[in-house]
Image (cartoon, rainbow, N blue to C red; front, side, top):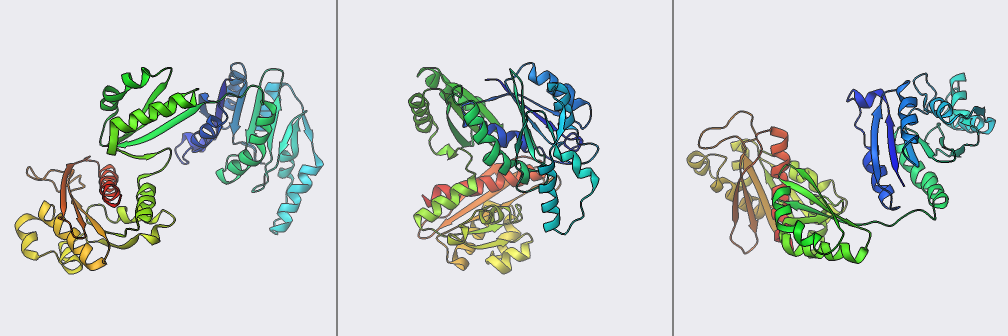
Length: 406
């Protein structure tokens, strides 16, 4: 079955709002054995009808997001009525339901809300538990169009509770099965992974191999109709890539760190300079991190490194804040003062200024202190773009923790 998604909204094309709908819907559809073949983002207005007309000429399922509200720029409903050749019919019960929602919030309803009670003839109404605009399903002899509201807090519950059950029932005989193994890899580029792995994987049978590169890391996707085959491919990839695989599926590095540390009963502390607390922030974004995270220091200035972590002034004067010696001292100071099982430290030059020939922008040192073990120090040269550098440095720091707490 061919599936297309149309995301509507001028704000998406102006860059004022980030489009998160494609990722959410594509992953959900994949669970039904469906894959999105095409996605397009169009502004409010006549472009919606044009995009919809083109989509229904190609696809059996078209999902449209946005444009179901009551204002003049919300014309998805009208465009769908026009393209499918179905007149709009007023539904009093929808308007009454909107009135109840307004009343509960002590809002006065106006005549513009009437537009949300218009439904293309024969259309299915999808309840909106978190807003006023209902979703709609419209179909002809060839194509089903699912119309969803734009706000994510309205779209996602509606999709899961209303649209998905309808689609499962409607296409029960034509939905396929697709199996996937997704592995997240740190420290290897996509070309290196392809050289190491792809020929071996494809020798197992008909498997689709995909790569998604990000700074310093990548995702490896293995997809096949045969579940046993894709699991064999996954096992081969794990054996070949080893510890460079830090997580599977959509799990993030910080989620993996918290999960592994909790399972091992280990506690950690962080000491950060150039990352400005990003390592600690990412850890504490994860539910359950309070069980394994003890202390986090942001010692940006040299004085802070000395006062908070006990880094000797003489060490800073001799080697500089960005050095292996200071990274080691920061980690050991954090370990001692926190009482944690291990501590990780980061110090580097985020740029774009501040670098020298000896210590260029992007240089970073990591210290990893573990109870009753020799402190490890790692040097990396990362991105010269400040925000990218900070993320990459935090990723490496978290990975050192991941490998140490297993």
